[in-house]
Image (cartoon, rainbow, N blue to C red; front, side, top):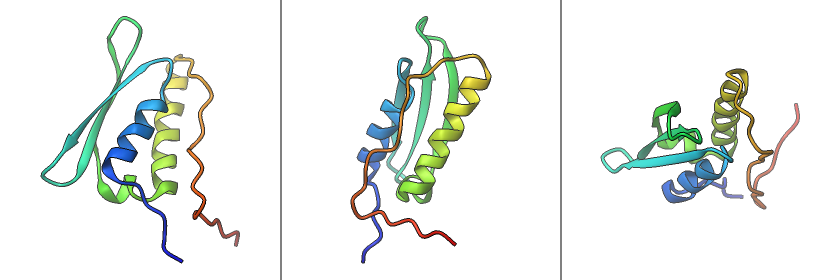
Length: 98
């Protein structure tokens, strides 16, 4: 079974939805197939910046989910209230419990 993975466009789209109601702007870096993301509050102030999300981080759904959840946790700790969010369903994703 092939391991599911996300494309750059899919990962940026997922990241854009993970921080609602705030605005997440993603910017691709063509030179290394990575991207940056910046989250802005209602007054358009930047409240979080992740300058580099590598292909190895976003192509693996588990790693992408972990990175986005950590960023959400950081914002929550800073007092920002986010809408509920979960990683989009991946039918080929299999979790193995040890």
